[in-house]
Length: 371
Image (cartoon, rainbow, N blue to C red):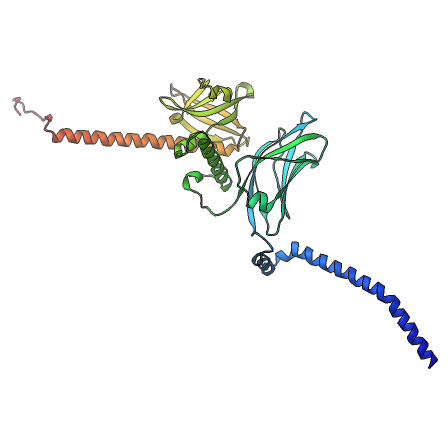
């Protein structure tokens, strides 16, 4: 009897001593379980279509999967090294894309990144040639992408991460890829163009329209928008492969011309361009297959001799220049054909009116000279 009493007392003491650690272990296990559930909610749970739909329906996730096209124009910063190759990397959750390396930090390259439901931030990183992070920019998906009113070529200040550069900034244009609901003019008729080029041309035309409105042109026509879009800086190849910075734009003299100036200041001052190309005499606009930043304009001069200009892009993608010049030339030819058609119709109406007014017509005469 005494032995049983002693055993009971010892068991109670042991259970009491173990109660605290057991509760502590249970609490730790609960914490790990909760963390596991949260991690599952953030990642693998959305791989299940049912759970993904539930999270979206209940409002836990604020958006569906979408594709973001980010056009990376350039990165601007102060550097210690005279030459530095840089890359821009864009990461959204499990998806990451990057530009090609650039020695002058001018990319003009569109990047497509899938932004999955539940992604909170998009990281934009500036890297050097060894993938060392130089600067970062964190974009909130809702505030900075989906709910923001996007303007072409927005400039964002980046956070410096390396002592080799200072005051880093990046110029980008963002476009959420959606259904083809834009007007036909902005899309253009891209002959042989890819969806990337279509999107970039549409953005460039939208930018040209906004610039036109800023100068007081609220009711810009399609032709006016194309002329505005076909203006900007380029590099012109001269002898021995050297290049010089130039500015091109369309001028309306007796003929529609593509003018080439030394710089934009001379254009703004209404100086005569150093070179001119009649838009109706442009034979073709071709991309250089061996140099992805270069394009060629082939045309005929006043002596009908075939000439060419070779340019390198500066402010936009090469293919955007090619497509917009092509669209402009085609528009000018359409306007010319319409004028010729109207002139032909007016001439026919004039001939018909003369016939009805009783004016004499020449008739064949016989040998005797009588009618």
